[in-house]
Image (tube, rainbow, N blue to C red; front, side):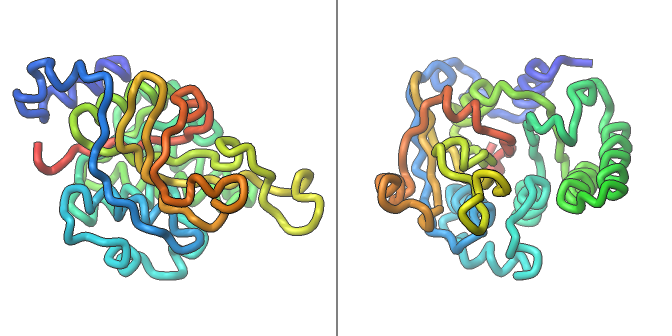
Length: 263
């Protein structure tokens, strides 16, 4: 069994055209991809991130198209990472790898399992969450199991936290990367919740956006959110801004690495 990083390099080597293996593009210290940014509606960051990603490959795809693909009752509370993968699959992006550090639901030992065994583990974890009446995490695991079990697509799950490495690999090959982060932590914002005691009983907001480039210090993002970008955060409202790699990696939860259709 290949180790996670070696395994990903092997997969890339099978699909990337020779012109990307010559070393020229792989050695670039700065990348900036022309990713279009859409302004999202509240709670629809994942849909907007998918729109940004898909539009990069097909300019005819826009945010409203992606919204129509997901019924309101399914999108109103946001999407899990596996649901984002499902949308990408429906758009024709059938080869994906989710890189996740969510060890509340997953486990590093799973990297040694074949896909069928990983699916069984996911279903077991989902059942445990259901027994604890944790519907949200149970659904996350069920969705991920379903994506891995889809015979018409090649979806994979890798448990890792080296987001810097994985993101740079795809960006320098010309492919944007969708990510989920702990937004509250990244912006050092107060927890969400009603009343004056949200610091006690509130919750951390998660958010999805697209990575579109990097240099040695920063990763460059296309962020569709606008609702909270006021006052001290007004400089982020236009959606294009850099984030220090150290800050991003400490707040990231998942990356979705997509095998682009043009390779």
